[in-house]
Length: 96
Image (cartoon, rainbow, N blue to C red):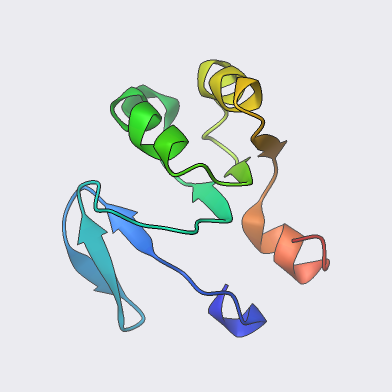
C-alpha cells in the first residue's frame, strides 16, 4: 500500500508494528476511511462488524481466506462496495 502511495492505518488485536508502521490495538476512532482490506478469518470478524460498518468505508476487500457472506451482505446494504480479491494483486495490476 505504501509503495503505491496509499495512506494506511493498521488495526489489530494487539499493538505492534509492521515495517515501522504502528499497529493500533482494538477499535480506535478513525475517520475518512476509503477502503478496509480484511486479513482476519470469518470466525473472528463478528466482533468487528459494528466497528467496520461504522467507519463507512467506500469498500471492503475480503482477501483470500476472509470471505464472509454475512458481513458482505451487511456492508452491501449500507451501500459499501464489496470485493472478494487480493489487495496485493489489485495493487500490482493497477485495479486498486
